[in-house]
Image (spheres, rainbow, N blue to C red):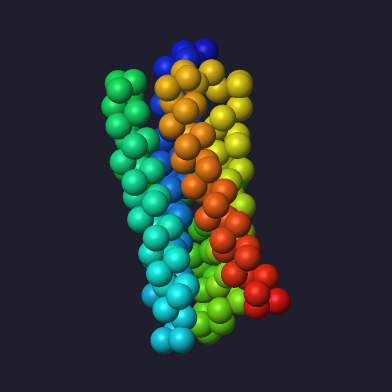
Length: 153
C-alpha cells in the first residue's frame, strides 16, 4: 500500500510530466505558426513559460517530500495522450487546426489538475494550495485558447 507521501510524489510527478508535454506542445505549435500569427506565438510562448514555472514549483514540492523527481515527458497514461497527440498533429500552419489541437491539450491538463486535487490523493494543504494556484492559470490558458479558437470558427 502506498503511503500518503508516495501518493503525493506520484501526483506531483504526473503534473510535472503533463506540464513538460504542454511546454513541448506549445513550443511546437509556436514553431508551426506562420508570419501572420505573431499574436498566437506570444500567447503560446507565455503558456510554455507558465508551465516551466509550474515544473520548477512542482519539482521543489517533490524535493520537499524527499521523492524522486520525474524529469521527462509522459510516455503513457491517458491524462497525457492529448498533448502527445497535439504534438503529432500540427501540419499545414492552419491557425484554426492548431488552436483546436491546443484546446484538446488544455482540456487534458485541466483534467489532470482536477484529478490531482481530488480528496482521494490526500495532498497536504500546502500542496493543494500550490496546485489550486497553478490550476487557476491553467484554466485561464484554456479559456484563452478556446476564445481564440472560437474567433476562427
